[in-house]
Image (cartoon, rainbow over all chains, first blue to last red; front, side):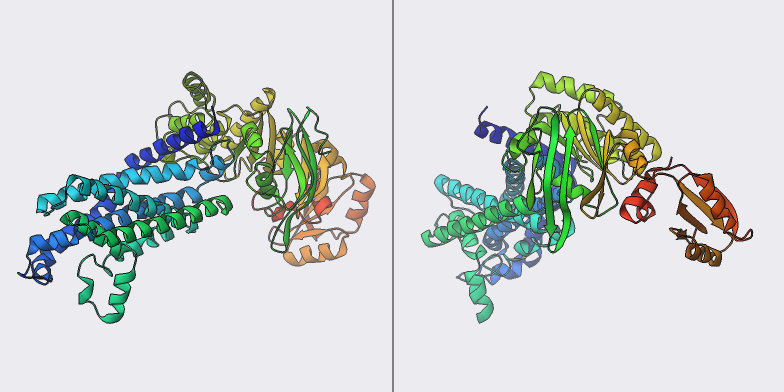
Length: 264
Length: 320
């Protein structure tokens, strides 16, 4: 077998290992999916009436309009939430001797991290399916055409790929699993300081500047445009650009850390 | 000699050095391990044992020196080295969320064994390491000794002819320790070369064909257990004193004495001769000493003689 065949075979082996981990540790998946789900319900049913009325444009919106407005932010939060789990699992691996064992074996070096990223993307896909399902049950309004749905799925896949690589690096950089579970929290909170839950125009000047320019805002705006059936080319390009940057930085950083960091 | 690899050397190391900052952890180690033998690297914590194993098992690059493992250069031919060795590190390297059988299968998959061979090897190892009953339980439920056995079984899945064991019995109870010694002896009987590190003199004595005594990153002595013991002509005498004042006084008066105040004992080297014993007894007041024991030379004496510090600086002793 060639080196490339081994890389695929070893990555598949590592993926199987990670899927088993998820099955054996279901409370973590439930917690990671539960977090955005709770935010979704909280924002729609507790804040939704008031917030919907505050949305710009006439006539004033309602709870259902607010659901549609925050769905992109909740999707973003879902991807971020699952990535916390990835960081924790990577950090746990690193504090255990098993990574050293893998490193002394004649296997494709990339397979340890590739298997981890593939597993996390499957987990993210499941989580997003749950969140989408609930949002649609609650009355999400969408005018997206089939190609726009495809674009949305593609962008979500790109985002979760990028975020996963970035949080793999965070997991590798963390001295222990506790730190690894705290670092990515920022990504769960970042949609709030952006266009996730309120229009950025309603924020005070300094904050508004940050909210307009932080990477998650164009990504959430691109989701919003695609869901509404009227995608904005500029938002979509910025969203793709930011995903590529986050993914590339995460990938290179993770690769470097994996090569240099000893398990102890 | 590196470069002139002969088929009979499993490991050849010359001038190996590694520093962290300005601290030299491995300070010029040379050693050769013939194939099919057991080599024990003996030393206290911080002597450089683990660093040496990490370099030889391709986990760490040396600053200087050369090392060939299974005939391959550890730096330039790391993949060939990895394909030839098995490593059981100091810290547990089992996947605790997987069962024992799944852990072994994982190793078989990563070792690119075909399906039929995987089944045979996994079942054989489960049986050999007494893990059949626990095979389908998650490793997190295993005892320390079982985890260690699984760890070693995982190392053997791909059938390496050379294995590294970094402090294989640290933290194990005496029974598990003896079981592990038995397994190592079986491996050697199958012709496998074993390179192990230990801080237990007893362990090196029990298992190794050759022992390298590592202290401060340097090999201070090397040889068979018998050769090392011969370096120290006699054993030691242990005097039991009535109180700590007398311990201090004895230590002051007797040349080469090593006081142990909490235990109220003083040990001093002894060449085994009656003359010296008599001279010693003549020099001690009757009421200063409550007991006396003459010990034949053991590796503790070797360690003390070679390194200038006793092994009781080690964290714990092997129960004999």
